[in-house]
View 1: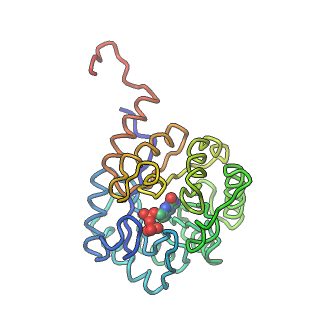
View 2: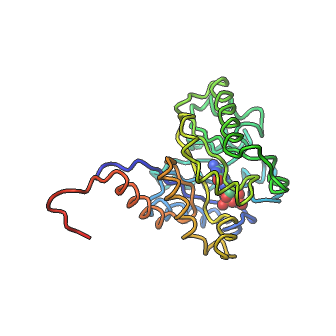
View 3: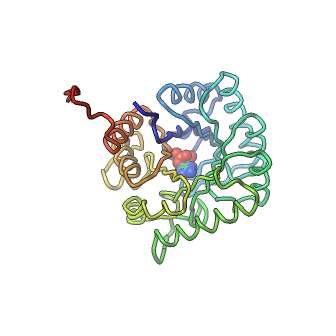
Length: 279
Ligand code: HH2
């Protein structure tokens, strides 16, 4: 079979308050073990975060964030992880320390707006960088979000951030773009972004999508517990793949790996041979 054309980013939240897995992997050893499981399940990237961005979350100090994430990044690298290590942070110092320890991707949900030193840190390390759209900040973003045209507005934002990042010296081929599902969006906004995701492709960079276990899936399905939103997560990611997204940020790697493997094989149809009668 041809090499797969998508990447799965497994989430490791080292936080007491993340919306779906807060407190589960607060101990470094538990988080490292979890990361190795995600990698074995098919994660290409491991995204380590020490600050929750759920709606209403309180900010975390730099010292505390470093205390949470560094042992996990160092531990995974020491154990020879083959996955790309990503740091989910908007603080330049946290990114710098993670990159020095061996991470090579900065996942900044503020798209370089949170810390004026961030662009330089990414440039200096020659790292990859994910720029995500968020309306306002986590404390306020879900208070009546409004757009003239949710896709047009976010596309313009990402185009501006991409230009800013390139101007700051980050190589364009190192940049990933993410419309930021759930970050200052109503349920209708999220659904419209997914439905019209293909419109972001002409920005010319790989699209990252993060729907995993998010509240809008719970609203649609009536599943109150984030753990019960895996099927909704898969449905949205399969749709996003079909619409052109290629990096998928999820908590549940194994089922998505299977779902996307089948989706990718179906879309590119490499299996048809005269002798292949498998159903
Ligand atoms: N979503 C979350 C955090 N980081 N990064 C990107 N690029 N895209 C996303 O959609 C995204 C993200 C929120 O999910 P989670 O990490 O599970 O929760 P919390 O922020 O509460 O830790």
